[in-house]
Amino acid sequence: MITDFFLILSVLNEQHFFNAMYSRDISKKVSTALRAQMETGKFRNRNLPYGYLWNGDKTAYVVDEEAAAVVRQIFEWKRQEVSVYTIVERLKAGGVESPERHKRRAGTRNGDNIQGEGWCPSTIRGILQNRAYIGEMICGKSETALYKGLKKHISETDKWIVVPDAHPPIVSISDFEAVERQMQEDSAHRETAMEWSADIRAGMIDLFAGKIFCADCGKRMYYKRQRICGCKNVTFRGVYDCSTHVRRGHATCFNHFIRQDVLNEKVFNAIRDQLQVALDYEKLLLAMRGGSGEASVREKHKAAVASVKLRLNALKKKRAGLYESYVEGILNEEEYAFAKQTYEEQYEALNRLLDEAVERRERFLASISPDNKWLTMMRGAAGMTGLTQELVDAIIEKVLVYGGGRIEVVFNYNDVFYAMLECVEQIKEAGGDD
Image (spheres, rainbow, N blue to C red):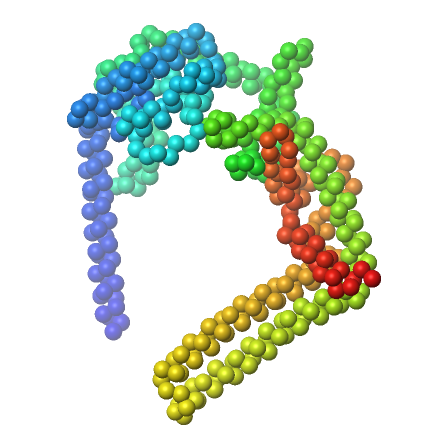
């Protein structure tokens, strides 16, 4: 028997080995064939650049004059030193259809799920840096080689395959290179400015990283250090805005801009208010603890658990005698099967009831305790004089930002807080406020 097992295992391992070898061989052949197509200029990326359409048999790019006019205008604006942000605003103001929407209307991209307006700074930069617009086909930017054990990754630039004159250009090489030089100069200027202000920006700490979200779309808020001009001494301020609005525009979500100093003040005030609530409830629980109301609610929860346990014990006895009734002929096979299934369903239902009753009792005992997690957390925040990273991490789960600068602070252990409120009401109803 053991010999047969190892024989089967050996056959399976051998089959797995040959399957792996076959897969690697196929992967190598496909990779080699694709590489050959790229090097001869026959390969065509299925994702058409904005500004191009397929020819009749989908073997080559042809110019899409409608979109190409937009591409040329973008390059012309940039040659005039118009910023990418201003270009975005001009395109939006002119009602120019976004690349994604245009591709779907032209039939070069399938699907109807389009989010946002599409025109954003990253879209403009992508167009201005795309060498497809001077007729070049660049292949091999990413590489996948399963036969080498390599997952998809960006390859080094010296391994890219550049095919000149692969399709008709939309902009001239001189215009493209002029824009390229200008963008390089802009990038160098930004780097210099970033170096100059590095120490200033390093001192500006985002206390709510990973904790601040747009209340309307649910996405995270971007934090950026904004330079304030128009003054003798250049200063910076921290600001937050909805990431969906920044990336996709007003059509998807609207501006939730809020300054960091305003947010910090509002959060600090919310924590201070919550501290007062904690103080009030701690005093209230102290007065209620050990009273008749608390004892009544404790007894109620204890009785609820005991009642379900009694019902479970009674059902266990019925289940135990069921088989004996079948053996003795009191129940036939069909009656036995039906009764057994019924008892099993009742047993599962009672077990769920017991779990719920125990959970309610434990939640009450934890909430009424002077050491419940919410009160303990709030005690740790007592005596605060300002926001710190330690305080934010200890007490805040997340912050939601609404339009108009309204915020909602969600504290840690909110579930314990609401359970405590429920317990207080139970004690009051049981006569705990006498």
